[in-house]
Length: 289
Image 1: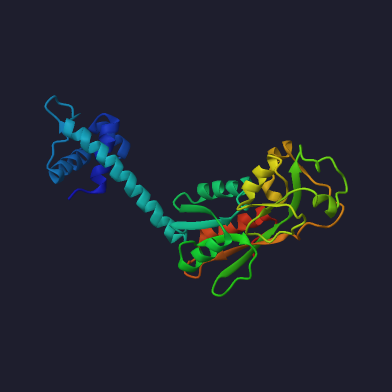
Image 2: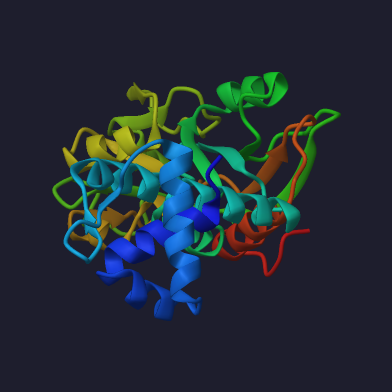
């Protein structure tokens, strides 16, 4: 049976160009490297080098084996790294679902940092409705759900991350865009765009529905109506085409708490701790509590 040392020696000889060069690179005697190669050929029952010309020249079979050995060694390295990550209590995989509008550029940056710090954790990131997140947490198909605050039911574990403010917006082409001190009566003269599944104040008898905040944002841009949207949804580039409405009355909903719910069957580790702390920074709190 071949060994990893023999495979490493074989690759080193191929990359170094000779057994003597490989021996210097490996810090071993030339005879030891030659013996490793000979033992590997015996274990594989293949001739890897042609030695008829005095120097060891890779055979056609040897070239085919080299490609496979490189893959095998890479997989072994990955295996060792993942085992080491497990010993540091880093999750091997994590399924995270975000409610509509909570995935923003700063959140994406969090996952870029997470990938850099925990390269061996496989991430599955989803955008889901609150009801789908609850079902996923219940059946174990989602590990962590990032959602607007709901009263958590045992045995879910809840972590407060911060809050989300809301703003009334319209297209720059909308009749309300240039007005100041807009009253509820003035809002009622125009179509209000509402999220079909969210609890948002209905301030106009003229209503169009949409099943997502991002869709609502597009509808606002097309001057189909005005809307109350999460402030974090409105990046710097959005304000080229959209304006915040100057309301004369306190008509906006109060900021909504953002919560991370963890499935009861999921054992949180270092990756989860990092993620929740980083998300708390994004959503407004100094640390996850």
